[in-house]
Amino acid sequence: MKRIVICSILSWGLVLVAIANQPNDTIDVKNFDPKKFEKALFEKVNTYRKQNALEPLFHNSVIYKVAKDQTDFLAEEKQLSHDQPTAEKASVQKRLVYYLDTKQYAVGENIARCIVLKLTTNYDENGKTIRSVAYTYEEAATYMFNSWRQSSVHNTNMLYEGFQISAIAAYFNSTTYSITATQVFARID
Image (cartoon, rainbow, N blue to C red):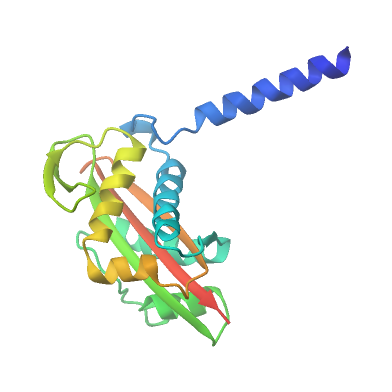
């Protein structure tokens, strides 16, 4: 009987954790959870790859450091850029080598910023611009994903079959109500 009770308690605990981490949660300006957004966007990219007969990307913690480095840099900047002023981190290629000592690789980077909790212009799933508000992590991830689909370079990164690993790092600016995210894609040989 004790084992059944313990298993039941553990099962309910797992259910509560799963419920607590839903991407459909409303974005709270004071308690933004970047992991919820990163997960929702990562899943959208992998679903898109599967729809195009490609293998899903595997999350990689070292690639996350590369993405986070750029996102942290962008958190201080007003303009989006793939470059940094520091020579050793000037490009995504140099940041990859900085965090992962490798000479054989392929790498790509997608960056975007979207406004949440305010009426703004976004792309819908058909590529049409719409006036809408992203209230949830899921909605914000959808609008950012849709913007990447509309850019040939970003879309190519998402659908490049050579990429195997990836990570997304996001930052929320509570003053501008904007989410900035960097997704790094890579293949390490």
